[in-house]
Image (tube, rainbow, N blue to C red; front, top):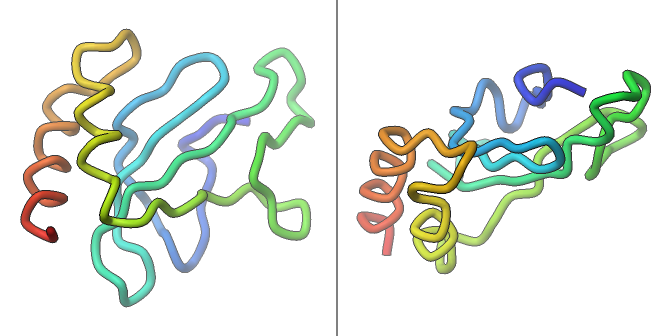
Length: 99
């Protein structure tokens, strides 16, 4: 499952901050709760039927992370292979403003 194709009406069109062959982290607006960090296992890239995890009624969705730990997770991803550092830094600034 391509992570860019994971969409849900409560978390539409998030920015992908990090992605490797199995896992992705995103930043976006979650319902009426404001900006949130989210993550998911992307599934086996070799199997187009594997939608990863989590899923809701067989539809791929994002797992929303509580704001109190978002900045720590974002910091841990900076300069890792698969990271979008500019997007991570912008998300970190937003996350710190929420604390």
